[in-house]
Length: 228
Image (cartoon, rainbow, N blue to C red; front, side, top):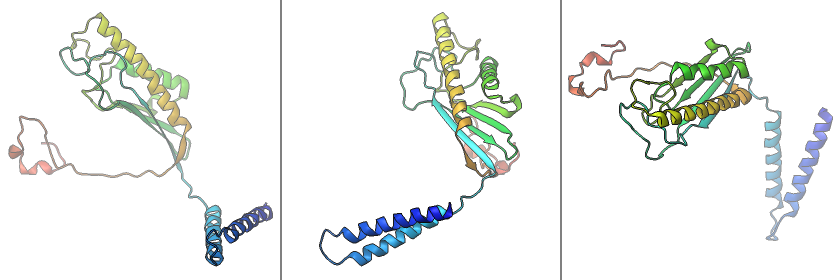
C-alpha cells in the first residue's frame, strides 16, 4: 500500500511539473520559478496528507430548525390579546448533543419561547425516548423566556383571554413546533464531530435590572457574587 501511494504521488508530481513547465503564455523564461512552486506545492500537500489528525475523546453534534409561527397565534406572556405583527428575526430551536468517551449521550435543547408547559415537555420527551433512546436524566429542554415568541399549549391557561379559535391556533402551532424540535435532535445525533470540552467561570458585576432599583441606589457591594 505504501509503494502504491508513492507511485500515485510521484505520478501527481510529474503531472504538476509538466503543466508548470509548459504553461508559459508570455514566452519568457519563467519555467524555473514555476517548477520551484510546483515542488513547494507538492511538499505542502504531502505534509498535509501524512499529518495525523488530533484525537478527540468527546463527540458533539448540533442541529437547529426555524420555529417561527406560520399561523395567527398570540404572543406569550401578556395578559391581553397580543397578536404578532410580523417577523424581524426567525425563532429557532437549537440542539447540542454530547457523547462521552464511554459512549454516554446527553441532549440539550433550547427554544425561543417565553415558557413551556409540562404537557409540551412530556410530549416532546416521549418522542425523544421512543426514537432516540435518551433517558430523562440525560435530556434537558429549556427556553429563552422570549416575549416575542408564541403561546404554547397548556401554558398560563388562566392568564390569556383566549377564545376557541385562538386555542385551536395554539394547539396547531405547538404540534408543528414539536416536530421541528424532534427533527433538530435527530440532526444533532447523526452529525457527530470531535470536540474538546472546557469549563469557565465569570463574575457578573450587576445585581438588579428592575426599574424600581435605579443604578445610583445599588449598594457598592452588589458586585460580590452572593445575592443581596
